[in-house]
Length: 211
Ligand SMILES: [Zn+2]
Image (cartoon, rainbow, N blue to C red; front, side, top):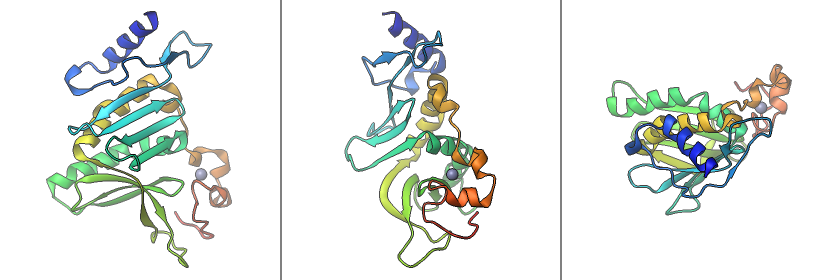
């Protein structure tokens, strides 16, 4: 009970508006993420996002998985590196998402988050795409990557829940994710050669500078 009370207190503090979130795990597996810490963190938490309640965000300190209840093929797994890169652009993505409805300018946004995955917001589609891309046969030019089916689309309602609930809660409850570093922050990436050699930054093996 002690653990459960700590979790309840921690989540209540972070997520003060009970109407805007739902924690699904009735009996989350509880464990200490660090033996040197006095804080007890859950080892896994699950959030439901969106009005349709079709998507779940499953979080461990190793990463964040977004899964679709109605279609198991539609999912996105963020390892720590991807999550760090994703967090670095969420406010940009949010601006573009708002612009989809404000319609004061064109929306054509795409940012890379590692290992061939891009986050995109595109006019005419009321969603945020997080999808793996491939380089078409015989092409090797940055910018010509094309999307595959692997990944997930979040509608604007699901995105709002991510921004207002899941992301802030994950930052508070999973320190390993909050502190995760993107590979491009590593000393090995300070040179072009280092970035070219990274299979996360350069999965399509471009030989020239690509960014
Ligand atoms: Zn890298």
